Length: 281
Image (cartoon, rainbow, N blue to C red; front, top):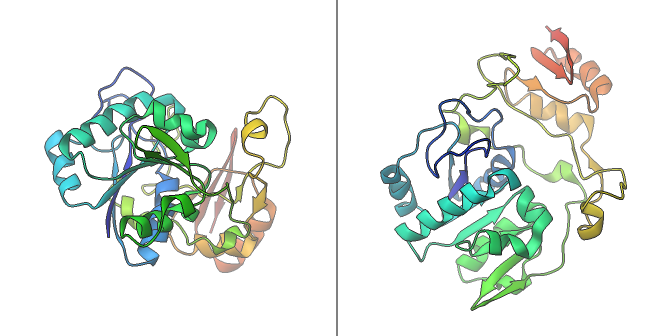
């Protein structure tokens, strides 16, 4: 199956639904979509990622990509959900029958309401999309019911229904490494505060969920299943081996990682919040 994954532009200004502002580019690669892409590629599906914040995408080019796809996935953030809604409307104007799946932070925190915010979307994925995406592909192939799929909300007539109860991936070492090959043509790392990283910039995540229980956080009102889980240092180091130059933008597991990485000789540039750690040769 051919899947088109979209990252809409950042919602930092009154921009259009397509293309990017000349002042604001995508700073970080779409890591969530890269993980979804990796899961799909592992099952031999054809995947393409378009980043509206890193490429000037015309309506003609978008339509061409839609015509070559069997389904579309789109990540949605709360700061750009109105932009995403505009893009969703455009997609359905091009092809009213193409399945449109949305996911990301906005969908996770707003649940079924995200389908009201993006009225042209067909399915909303809550929490971790890796669990749902392959089931959704099986549904599109006529092999599975939406009602049997975890972590989703979907339209059925004029109603919004829910799939099976929310689940998370307990052992996140089992998730394939992000498919960074899908965004190879884009350049990231355009930091607003002036840091210029190496030519190729990427991001990593070493944990999922949160270990804290802050009363003001909406997560504990809505998503009790979102437990804290950590990748093993060995798994993180193995991912580092898959690319030659990196920027690590978190201090998470730093002591263990720097020790492990120095043993295998990876040329790594580490950034902690507020200061540079330096280089490992």
